[in-house]
Image (cartoon, rainbow over all chains, first blue to last red; front, side, top):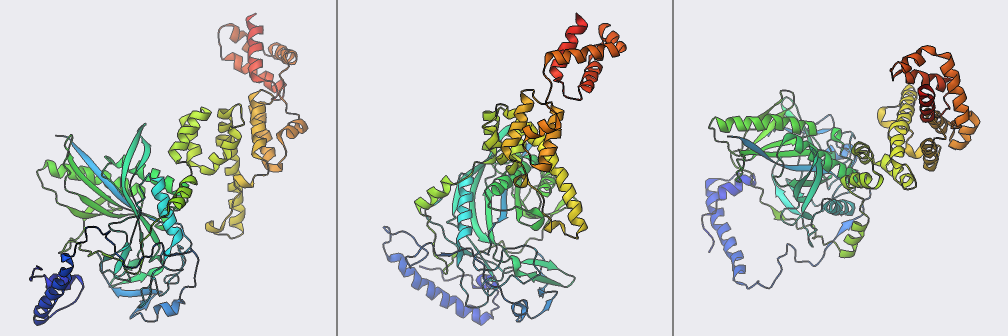
Length: 95
Length: 493
């Protein structure tokens, strides 16, 4: 059984999503349903299977260490809300 | 009660590749901001990362150099957090299946061998560089996506000096192995330092304090020299230390606590769906292992063993890889490898420095920046290494005085001629003919009655004055050892 009291507020904060109180309630029950659904997998016997992060049987996909053209500087900054001195300008955030 | 420090490090090192980790933008320092960027490293919608095979190779090579296990399978994960220098809002890193783990680094410290266990060395990507202004911050993404190796140690270090020695040893291994240039000025190496204190002899670890983002080894040492006594004093006062993060203020020379977040970091790691796992093939690994160079410390120990070099000389030849590589092939052929090392380290290096100073002045007058200057190195010398070997053997067997040897070396550097030819044309061959030296000694004794009297009165040092006279009469060519012997015999007799 999945706990029904999933901390939606905390997860939303991690994802930087701002929720109204009614949205929080709605999502809480919806997320609980989703997790319950995924939980069904727990019923399967997987004791003989290797855990994997991928279903596709491919490994070692890589590229040679070669240079490709970068974007033109103006194009790179074209969608920046603000720019100055060639930099993307963002709100001041100091950790 | 006495306290001891327990120190562990996380060292981030930029790998020496041509291109970035997931795209073909240049991995190159110093370009104007946001000129080495593309849709992949700016995380524009719809892009996919493709791993740089050279970065993977360098990671595994590092693992081998640090005596790590190479797990059969490695994968990448997303480490989620929001900060303007991370364009994807997550950093790609290896969370629970790193490319390498459980290794160690050995290095000399305080005259003994220290060993630090390496928890893991995993591959990840660097982030952009923020510059903070009065009201805003600016971000340059040239560095975003540069392959970054994170090398994590177990808490095996116990002092600021030992930590400093470990970092130097690590840097040396990485430079030797061609893994990274480790240029601190260019931010290629950065460290997070974890340090706690506990009563001596106890096992439990104290509260871990992390000093973040150190960008110089001397800074790490000074931060620890400040932080360890600070923690000990706090504990002695009865304060309870709590796990926290601090920043080193290099100007003030203090660490200060960083504003702690309301929530501890919760990165919600998840496997990167856009990258397949990596499984290094055994024969490929065997090849890499076979092509590994000798570790710097092992080289030093071998130089001392095989050529009976003093530790100081072996250290110089270890630190300067090119010099060591110049030395070894001729040392193997030499009857006097110790003397040969001495000539390379002192006389040959001195010549190279001399040449470099001259070239620096010339190139500066042509308006070249220090970055663009090129200097004559060992590989550019006009004479062959075997010529230097011949020269040193001549000095060793007394055919040439040490002083004349210097003259010959200068001429070899200038003209590239073989030493025997130079000795002949300049008439420098050392006189070891006893008869000829006796004549010169007689002459010197006759011309210098005062030192003769002094010596006979028991003043040993007076012999040197007479020796000097004989050398002068021979124009520096008399064999000094023989001069000393003959003078002594004549004066005592």
